[in-house]
Amino acid sequence: MGHGNITREILNNISCPSKVFGFEVNKDFCKQVESEISDSRLVIINDGAENIKKHTNENINSVIGSIPFSFFSKEKGMGIIQDSSDKLVDNAYFSQVLYIKFNFKKFEQIFN
Ligand SMILES: C[S@@+](CC[C@H](N)C(=O)[O-])C[C@H]1O[C@@H](n2cnc3c(N)ncnc32)[C@H](O)[C@@H]1O
Image (tube, rainbow, N blue to C red; front, side, top):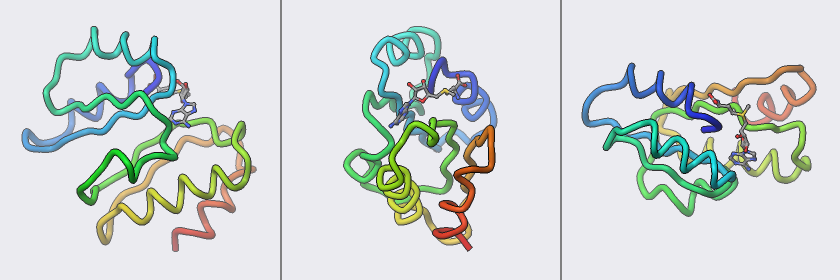
């Protein structure tokens, strides 16, 4: 979630019964988003995206991320992409901000 800029826009564009699981490892950022965004559809999770399976029981329709893959080991990065892919329904949407294409191959290996 970072400071919640993308999260806020997601919430502005989804339907009423939808739910957003916002992952963020930095506790201060979680507190900031909690104080600035008041929306019952948002579930703030102070944990890494590598634990997506632990925090989501249901399957999910989309993943929208801007987490820093460049700082992760190959195993950790691949684990996040694979676990996210496992949780997604058919024909789901996956979006990840990449500032450089260095990590793009990891996504190509998992998503067709
Ligand atoms: C580029 S910022 C996100 C900016 C955010 N999209 C916004 O709109 O403000 C990347 C964020 O990823 C967080 N982060 C780092 N490792 C993470 C992990 N394993 N899982 C989830 N978030 C992580 C960082 O703490 C940082 O806040």
